[in-house]
Length: 516
Image (cartoon, rainbow, N blue to C red):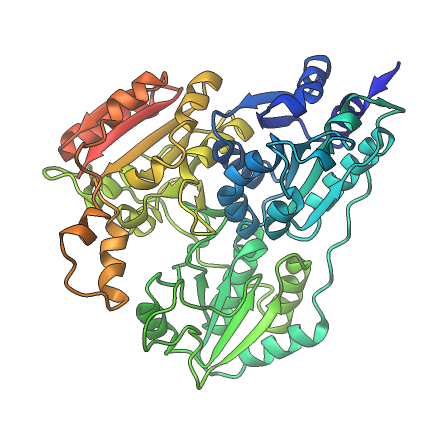
């Protein structure tokens, strides 16, 4: 049958296994929208802001382990979504980013929405292509999917001029074979084995495939055999936690605490990560956190074939028959009395369902959460990887769409929730099984901490006003309900316990405003 470029692209994407499109389209993308109507196998999910679209694609990719596609409107639409594409890049999330463009013959006229789309896309894209002819669109779509799945995963941005979408095309393109992962060199495996066998204190800092369930089982064998300490990066795209799994502490967020922890080690072994640095620069403090008398050993780089290399390392340290230390299930009692970050974490640990997906953007309110939930039932944990706030609500939406059979718990700070609050509307529209715990302290608490740490002392009323979310207070119950999400407010631990238990028993979007 005759088809246009947009139809050939949709058929190609579905044929390559891409079956969800998070979208906020405009005029230039209408032929793609029309093709969605005709293409079985592609689900279209509308976001009311592009940051919701890109954040949902990130959460989806982390849980589905394959790309969704986005559909964004020209350069300004892409620019609205850049913050969560930045987070997705740091999480190594595979995403096919489709950005509409003016027709090829219209670009030179400098119409009001003309912009440098390539310039916007380049910093967050591992691959980028402008389709200049309708007959190239299908091929470029297949290349985009292949590129998105390259290495650890990356963002592939396909820029689609309007006439290449509406002009005649020939056919869909068949899927392209995956790009093989690079092998970890034997020399690195040998060097790390020597360090682990040296008798000197070692810490294995890991991320990526190192914190997959298979990776942690292998690292758990190595740690048990050699006495090395396992530790995760401060922020991890996805980690499997809970009963029957290997638990690892995280490198502390604050640089001085991280330095203190690392001082105990002579060897820092890096698995799918890089040598640690402070999140920000601070006056008269080091940015690089490796102790001066320690050696950092790169075992594997992100995107390399890490798991076979870890199997070889297990053999090199004689740990084949060793059993890793696994977590036993232990739930705390439900809290009573005051509602604060500790009592919220205790309640979550007591009530977290089996196979939940936890999306953590709780900021200062969530510091107690990882420790208290370590012995909860098995669950997946997704962090804010790039530091650009506004990821939590969209990523929870995308994760729920990727895994409709699993409950999603979003731990969400109030300040960052306002960046992408429109995600609640998408959750209601798609009837996603997301429970949001909204930490309502009515301030940017982390900025109040950082204000002192950077040496800007004695904050006055104008400075403090930039970190307070008051005058007026945000009413999260009314906001959520206005977008179709059931919501309640909790001001005591007992009320929160009851609200959380009810929300988790009620599939569909729910929000609990936890007033701190």
